Length: 407
Picture 1: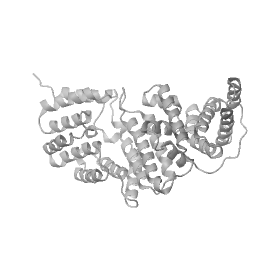
Picture 2: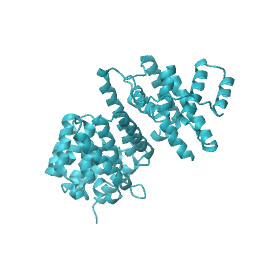
Picture 3: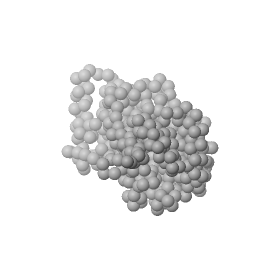
Picture 4: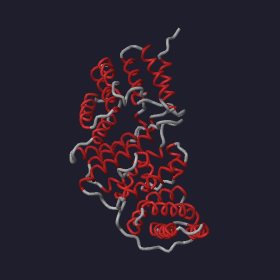
């Protein structure tokens, strides 16, 4: 088995190993550290010596040994001996059939944690990513991620959180927090908030994988299905979103033949089934909007009246600054750019939108549609100065250049 295949297997097994340890020993923080060391031992040994017959049992055994040593807090010499022992063939213990993935999601998204801590802890404990991998994905120092994870585990311990399903009254809110974390991970991967690349494929891939895991745990939850459909339909456009030089290609100009037809088919099927069987929620509505875009063979074929109706429903159900901006674009496509500009001026009073580069970009686009290239150019330039993402910045600068007066 190749190194890449081993890494994929370890990420799948991470929550299956951590859950039994926490249930048996308690102490989420110590158990999570022990699992990370077991994963590291496997990553070093399995590519060369082969994957054991019972990889999950191997990891549980090694992690249990390491957890015992951590708990005893022995000397550095003893810890080195234990690390060496972790690389030796492990004695396989019987592994329980209980799937603790949902409990791990809920614990990592505990209400006492900040959103950035929830993201880091979810990627590590449920996703099986190392501290270094998380740091590379979010372009922050490894020490920063390590500190966030350490503080998150301390907060969980201080809160007295138990490794079990929360009471029924708290469950919906906790699951909503899990969905928000997965959505945040996906969005950061699909359009990076800063840096030289538009996409961070490792994050979108991980977000989709984790959302599939959550759907296995909650197959009847419409919003879980809606989020998975939204991710699939959105990520399907990724091959057409950039040119070979990394430059951004807007939705209306994308070569739709490059879209991932399989992901679109799965996403459309998923959201169609879900809308007919579950209470409607914000993620389902966003997925429905993405499906309308995906089903248009050309940009000119887009059913903008249907998209506007869906955005109006979304605005009433889950209002937010980005929902407002997207609804205004749909208004402009249905009722004309001047109507969109009028609504944009009113929406800019929201402090969350004031000074945001996407407001300037939308205004520039609508001014261009309205036939005011000089004003549109100024707005494109302002948006380019305000964004921290290099491909977005280059795209906006290029749009401004295209509108420059010619001698």
